[in-house]
Length: 376
Image 1 (tube, rainbow, N blue to C red):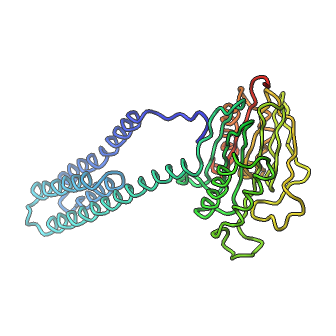
Image 2 (image 1 turned 135 degrees about the horizontal axis):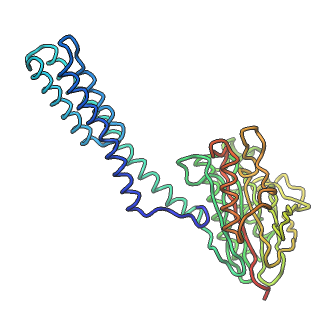
Image 3 (image 1 turned 180 degrees about the horizontal axis):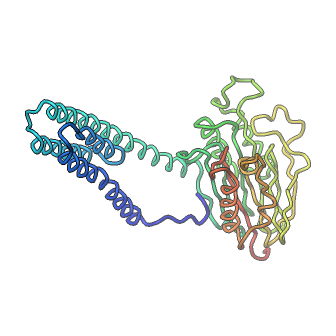
């Protein structure tokens, strides 16, 4: 879900796959040819036939059962040719070599079939994960009223599409409301809790007149979730969600923010980066019983040309090889290009370059919001 992500056309990907597969397939056939020729020319006491087993075994690592079976059959025919050229088919040594080659070829062909079935299942699971991503974590529109918006989700798991990080935006009669959050925990449980928060936000963003009412609705939804956490009901270490909820009016050069234990957004203005620290942050959603105050919004200037960067702690807690955290404010100030899309492209590339082998220790999400044009 990177901003302005590009992908090569499908026919180019399939063409490259066929070319690479043809190159790989030449290896077992070359092996069969070399072993056959050398075995025929070798002294009588030297037998290289067992090396032919490597041909179908190699093929099974990248090809399907039909191709593997075909390579195995070619290897058996080659072994038969060696037997005829050197002695005869009734020679006991060659007979056992042929039988062993037939059995091993059958085994690896069966394993290639199992691998193909497993790959089909993985493909189906990936398609389901993509569909779930589109339902749970819907892509944000790139323009909402006077705002330009870009978003990105970087998963720490190679095969995962979504996790416990979340974001959403909704238009109201006089502005735009946004949320970014991070569910405690990982895996499917975190995805389920993220869907609860997102569903509550989408349901209430249009209905609640003020920001405290919206955050209160989110708190009630998280607290009422029967599947929240894994430590049993009534425990203070149940599942919770840190969140930053924003209300950006169309006609005012400002924004209102309620922070529920979430890292402060960053305001980018004229080359400077300013954290939007609230004076009285609320506890994370799901822990309101420990709150000393209500959900009090705080206003910050947000003028045309300003960019606000929302992010989860997976960004600022990413470490390099020496253990140093990612310096987000410094890197955000060093952005290249204009607009939220360019900012996120710069930060994504820089964040992955900061971490060893481009691997994150936790999911990371970012949303960049720019106010454009004069105020009405």
